[in-house]
Amino acid sequence: MDAADKNDGGGGGGGGGVLRPSRICYLAILSTAFWALVFYLHTCMQGGNGVASVLFNPSAFSLPLLSSTIAGGRPPPEQVPASAVAAAQENGSVTAPSADDRCAGRYVYMYDLPPRFNDEIVRDCSKLDPGTDMCPYVVNCGMGKALGDEGGVFSGRGWYDTHQFMLDVIFHGRMKAYECLTDDSSLANAVFVPFYASLDGGRHIISWSGTSTRDALALDLVQWLARRPEWRTMGGRDHFFVAGRTTWDFRRYTDADNEWGTKLLNLPAVQNMTALVLEISPWSRSNFAVPYPTYFHPETAASVLAWQEKVRKAERRWLFSFAGAPRPGFNHTVRAEIIQQCGASSRCRLYSCGGASGGANCSSPGGVMRLFESSNFCLQPRGDSLTRRSTFDTILAGCIPVFFHPGSAYTQYTLHLPKDPKKYSALIMHTDITGRNVSIEETLSKIPPEVVQAMREEVIALIPRVVYADPRSRRVDFKDAFDVAVEGVLDRVAERRRGTVNGREQ
Image (cartoon, rainbow, N blue to C red):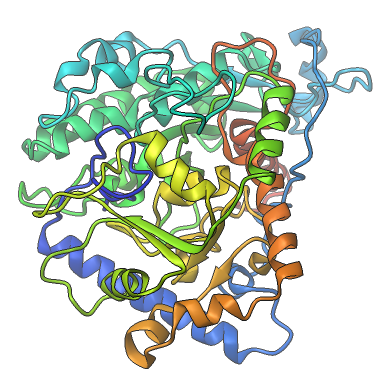
């Protein structure tokens, strides 16, 4: 399923969510039941360290969470000659034994793919979505058109009308400027495949093309990779790529034309690689979930700090708010209850999107961000699937997210968000809202002001690691969502490489 609502707050750029066929709905129900069981087990365990610890027991793939502090500037380092790497490779390592090499263990080799796998897809932007002109969203390296200050909502440069499914293009642009990018594949610690999986899949699944058409380019890519010497080194287990949609768009299990999505992530060769997706499956740990793109793409740490100070000083007149559209025919869901409770409260601002009776334009960056900047808590029920882009727009605005299911963030973005969810968010289980008539206003009102302040500071501190810096900038001097994701991949590949050397399968 798509991860954000077509007309929901933060959906961005015309959205892209569509109703799914019944089998996908069935999978969504199974997924929700699975996560509910996980959360139940968590609450029954003593001494647990959070929901993620219940689902993901420590293993060789467990990665340390990374600091959200802003790093200093980093001039490009000199690359170690390939000849100096040969001896290290004999011991199963591709890192040269040089104490002065700041890129040791961090080198990435990027394929120069034939343009049919990326650039030609973008050039054919008018065919990416039959219901939306996507061409305005592919400009500026996938950031979309530049925005003004939107009546004082935004400040300074770096704001763009970014579509939620443009991460493939943005990430590729950031990789081109990666300080440890190497053109010597023998030096590489990981290999990046700049395939625009999201754009390729999206243009076919939205129009319900036949399965052979949907899968054609992915199968072509697998054949192309298999002929490369870099692939044969580890069978693709050191390769990674971005598929900037939710995992459900790439997990079709049959070749029936009435089934949703492509089978990209179910291809055996692709399962050897690490995919960076917007939402992972609870049944697969082979990929990482990364943040949805937001509207903010700063060039420098100074721009981030200025924005953080602005949202820190923002006047927050609403205790809580919700931006989203009602779902006709779903009157007993948590979303319906949220809309009802918010509409009945004088302390909640309801930004109702679209619908048959009209409503606010939740594809308007200024309107949505103005709402979030004026709220203490921002409600984040599931979108078309468990996650929403709106979650990251909320964090960007310094608004404390309120989740109704642990699978909406806590078990998803383990690289980018703190291990302790209570530091930056609130959780009200959806079953408490729909089955026990729990009051959202009363629950949030009970949180002491000093705790709210501490949570907001934690949210504001997260901003640099959940935004993607301007791909065109050569002055990026802070650790953004791209950097965090790449470090996570490098850690995983290093574990796999050590496992290969020591004779164990990772």
